[in-house]
Length: 308
Ligand SMILES: Nc1ncnc2c1ncn2[C@@H]1O[C@H](COP(=O)(O)OP(=O)(O)O)[C@@H](O)[C@H]1O
Ligand SMILES: O=P(O)(O)OC[C@H]1O[C@](O)(COP(=O)(O)O)[C@@H](O)[C@@H]1O
Image (cartoon, rainbow, N blue to C red; front, side, top):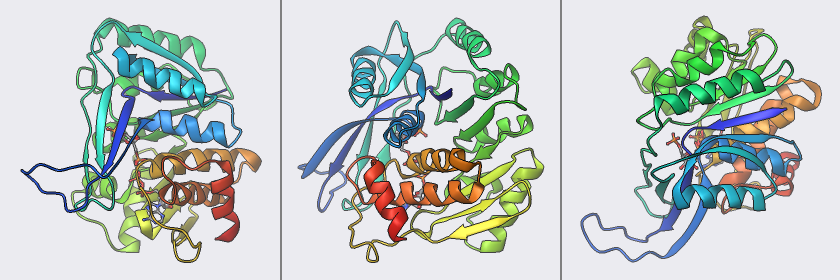
C-alpha cells in the first residue's frame, strides 16, 4: 500500500488580483478554493494516475471536514485523524498573474503530544514491508520538530520506500534514516546550504552532499528550469521543463507543481522500477500542473509527457 502523510492539510484560496496594491483595497479578479497540503496533493495526483493510495494526517474543524469530503469526492481513500479543536489552515495564494506572486500559509491546528504518540503507534502497526510512504509538507507549530524522525524510527527503512518533501530543517533531520528520495526545490536546497544556487555543478554538488548525509536519491526541482536527479548509483539526469510555447499551453498556476512532480515520479518509478521513468513522469506531472487550473489529471500529464 502507498500512504501519504500530511500533518498540515489546507484549503488553498487562490486569487488573481491585477495591479495588486499593498496597503490598499484590492478587488479579487478570479478566485478558487481547492484542497491542498503537500501529501494531500500527492494523493490526488496519484489517484488520478490510477495509483491506489491512502491519505493520512490530521484534520480539524469545518475546513478539515471539507478537505476530507472533497478528497473522497475525487475518489481518494482517506484515513485522517480528526483533532478535537481548531481548524485546518486556509492558505492564501496570489497567483502568477498577481505579481509579486505571494503565498500566505497558515500554522495549522494544535496537536497534543498524546495525539502525536498515538499517530506514531498507528504508523508502527500499519506500515509493512513493500509499502511506500510519502512524508510531505510542513508540520503544525505545536508539533515536535522530530515528528518525521519518530515515524522513520518505527518503520523498516530497508523494506519501505520512503519519499520526503518538506522544508530545509525538517528534511535534513530525516536524512540519517536514508529516505529513498527527497525532493527539495532550488530555494529549499539553497536554504540548506546558506546560498542561492544557480550553477549546475554547484546544485549537483549540494545534492551529493545530501546523499553523504544519508539521502539515497535526490530530485532537485527548479521551476521553469526543470529538474536534476542525482541517483544513488551516481547517475545524474537533468532536463528543462516542458515549455509552454512548445506545448501551445499557457502558464496558469504554479501551486502544487512540486507535489504533482512527487506523485508523477512515484507513479512512473513504480511501473518498471526505473529512475528514468520516474524522472520523466515527474517532470511531466509538474509542468502539466502549471498549465492547468488546480492539479493536472492523468490525461493532461500524459499529453505533456508525449509532447515533450
Ligand atoms: N514555470 C514553469 N514552467 C514549466 N514547468 C514548471 C514551471 N514551474 C514548475 N514547473 C514544473 O514543476 C516542477 C516542480 O516545480 P517547482 O516549482 O520546482 O517545485 P515546488 O512547487 O516544490 O517549488 C518543475 O521541476 C517543472 O517540471
Ligand atoms: O506545508 P507547507 O510547506 O506550508 O506547504 C503547503 C502548501 O504547499 C502546497 O502543497 C503546494 O506545494 P507545491 O507548490 O510545492 O507543490 C499547497 O497546496 C499548500 O498550500
